[in-house]
Each structure stands twice: as C-alpha cells, then as structure tokens.
Figure 1: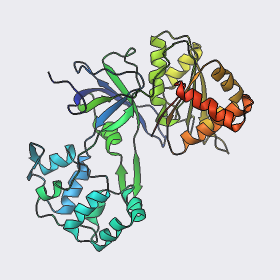
Figure 2: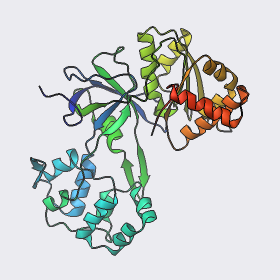
Figure 3: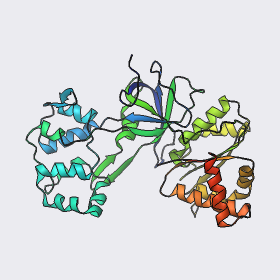
Figure 4: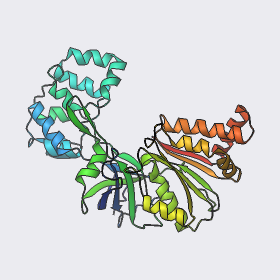
Length: 374
C-alpha cells in the first residue's frame, strides 16, 4: 500500500464534531476528531494536521450561475476529469484573489478597473482581503466571459491544505487526531462569507464522513525532553489547541514538571474551552491556570496582562528552568506577550535591556522559548 503523505493524503473518517464554546458566543469554536486507524500516519505532540477542504456547494452554484456556465460540463485537469461543479467543490480555489489569478481573469474580462488594480499594490492588497471570485463575477465592471467551463478552470489554482495545531496526544488517544478550530464567518458587501476550511469542518462534516489529511511535522514546537521541566503555556482563543495536546501528553508521561496555562477569550459565560478538562487538572494539582476574560469588565484584560501581574512568580519558574510556549495570533498577541516577557525578565531579574535580550536569546537557543503563531 502506498504511504499516506502530502502527495497522497489519507481520507480520515470523522469520529465526531462538537462546539466547545457556549450558546451566544461570538467565537464559534469547534472540536473535531478524526480516525487515523489503518493510515500508518504517526504524529508527535506539537505537530500540525493538514486538512484539504472542499468548497461550499452553495458558493460554487452561485459562481457557476453568475458566469453563465454549465455545471454538468466535463472539465479535465491533472489526469482527471469530472463535472465543472464537482471540480469547483473538490479541486479548485475559488476564494483567494491573487495578482496572478486576476491577470488571467482579466484576459476574459478586459476590465480597466482590474487592470488598474493589478498595477496598484495597495489597491490589490485591499481588494484581496475578503473578496472571492463570485465578487468578480457579480460586478459588471469585473465580470469575465468564459467561452466554456474548461477555459475557466485553466485559470484556477488548486485548493490548498490548511494547517491546524493538533489538539491531542497520540499516547492519550491512540489512532485518533483532534483539532480545535474557530469557525470563520463574516458579512461584507451584503454577502455572508465563510472560512473555506473551518466551515467545511463545522458545517458539512458529520461522523462517518471523510476529509483528506496528512501530518505536518513541527520540530520547533516540542515538549522538553525531560518530563520534570516546568512549562508555561500562553494560548488565548484557539491557541489553546496544542496545549491541550501538551497537558494530555504530560499526564500520559506521568511528568513531574509543573504546568502553568494562560488562556484568554472575551467572556467567561460563553467563551471557555475545555473547561471540564482544565478544572479537573487544576483540582488534581497537575496544572496552574490563569484566564483573561477580556470583555467581562470595563477595561480590557489580555494574557499579557496576566503575565505581567504574575511576573515575579513567572521569573521564579524561569529560573528553575521552565520552558515558555506561545500559540496564537502572530501580529498582535505574540508581539505583546514577548514584550511583556522581556520586561518581566528585566524587572524581576534586575537586568538591563541588553541583558534581558541575552537571557531570552539563551532561552531560544536552548529550546526553552518556542512559538506556534499564525
């Protein structure tokens, strides 16, 4: 049997899908379990799962209608052929606007508006965010006229895998892999929009269905080799995912090193994740837990706020050799947390800025400071 990998993804059966946030939450966070039985796929705590999504059939139907194409017309691509509708659902990217795609699209649209946009990096970047091919097809100024379905699919790129931090330990749940995913939904220009892969999993996958997956190794996000090393984990929102895997693995390993988890989300009443698991770990003395409910008071509290407030104790943990981990938003959270970490190292270690930077650099060199940010 051919090995399953990136070139030959495994059709993983879905074992279950559930929402982990509560009713009323603006953050619809799902937990999904896939079976890896019989795949030969193995992962290490800290790895990611690549999921190859399928496009929303409703979006595909609307696009075909807007372009005036025949949904049942056969199209050929990469040694395969099927109907246009099936091809757009399963094989082609119809949601991401890039310069190359626009250039090809405009060969059939002859749009002066698109020509100007292609030449303007700022305008192109602004338009690319949130728009999809249906937007182009519905706008009289940008609509393209394709002579047939084959001409259309030849300009399209492939549906690409999406990477998600694995939220389970292979030793805790053998033969299974779990994800914690935020379902992306928003409205723009009178249309409801959906994240391609997140809503593929949340809305259309049911137990018994399959999704093509493969393991993506993340060697730069690993638990300490010594199980007695303390760990500090910063993971607001779906950044909790790899840390659920971490605490499962530490329990499976009977690790003696302490665990300290900093979590954050808007509201305590609706936005907790894996609360029963966390509460059990805290009650049993396995984990220390601090949470920032950012909107539950008149002022905003974030994970970096809690990190600063706990600075003296965090420094004690660091001096005992604790490894520091962070997962989540790269643009704001990660930068704010790193600034706070540097400041507490300087303050509680009685170090100047240069010495604090050296201390952090030493942590990185010794794999005591690791990030999984996106």
